[in-house]
Length: 277
Length: 294
Image: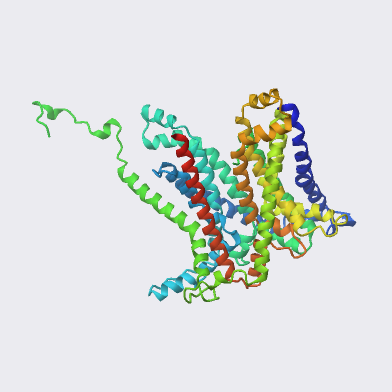
């Protein structure tokens, strides 16, 4: 098979270099110059852009991004593990079907789900309206607060965590569990010494799939934070909307470096490079 | 207490704890309750937006904060608003074409990758992970920069062409990653045998290899479609000339605070459709397995 189909991979190399590597080169160049849009005719080499990285608004946006992403990822790990483990241990005949129904919300439009979340986070919303017609008066006013953003992030990205932890749990050989019980471990010890270590791969890939979009997304903080909370994604988006490609590119390059670190981590963990699915 | 032999009082009586038994029943019970609460909370978090979308879709009032009465007029009027119809049509167009193209190309690329040496393979898999792991906003901006630098050659490039290219770009890695493991499980003798029997390599690819890996191709296709159908950020940066997909349409309507309730009806219908499809495929698969067992 080898000699015949080797050339099938060549176009993919070219494709990935053109669309995945060259943009980074352009962004790197853009962050060292001062020009208008993509017009390089009046470009001047400058290092001024880097001063922007230390201004307080950028630092706060970066800190916010890290803070929200870490909190959301940790919560997703705890909740996601419990849900995935409960399904894994359940006695349903078709666990895969239960799993897919559980993550069904993932298939409806993300922006619409966030908009719906925002609506019910207002003090007067459709659910309180229905409840008040039934004589129950409750009120919840968290729209525009950090809590709202964190809830939005968790609600949007937790399916990814559940799915990848569940996949890892599913791959565990049942005879290992039997062996652990035969050798006298209690249920709790069996969990911590056998099952948990074997499922860390799922936690790592789930965390990457939750952490990265939480850190760099701009729609969720914009809608649920109602402009009070700026993450780094919002700052980049604003720069590109104002045609300030230089600062936007610089910030994008910084994010990219963080992500390349994550890619490196993944390739360390799994030599075949197939952790992600 | 059992009657003891005389003089037993002088010995200490061992408790069950002395043998290393620890009373954990209460902690376990508390943990069980806690776990049930967490699971209910998780399901609540995932389903509350869907539930709200559903409520909104049968709400006669256009104000999102009050519930008038139950109505189905938004379902009847989904396509009354022309711009929503166009956006839906664009989304379907882009996601179907992107899925088809990236399934075909991704399968061929994966077959090529599987024949590479270890080093080249690691190299391309590292590159393959970039679109997958990269932040959407960075991918989107990167593609936008590349497409903008081509604008002098293709002046009317921005629009559906750029969006389609972008969607193929970020769905390809999913197909490649789903197909590769199936190729590894493939028996290499199968292909050799077909050559020995006089089949040319490329027909053999079509007749022998593809049928053996079709499960991987199918799951890659489903993943690609899911990603493409729901994408916002990359589409937002790579579109142009007023070509909106559903996400962009929702985002700009939200900005104008003029989100039509019809979109809630459409979203509910899509969710129900996915649910039905899911049940049907599961039933079919169950029947097939049942068939194979007998």
